[in-house]
Length: 77
Image (tube, rainbow, N blue to C red; front, side, top):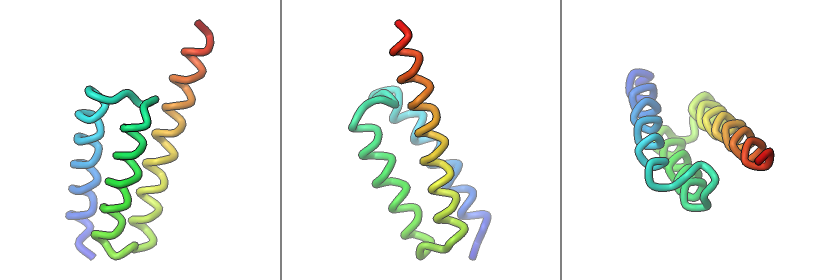
């Protein structure tokens, strides 16, 4: 496993996520469709290596936590 490539791809994914969120909010279905598909592609690229899968799950959980914060903040208004 070339871990430099894995971490480089994760960094690229994070950059792409930031760009994607400029067009589609964290609350949008478009963003979550993209997130699931792109993380699935990343996982498959590395043959579903257990550690890569865990990285992808951690990223998804992190974004879900961010979504909950936004949702809760919007519900306060």
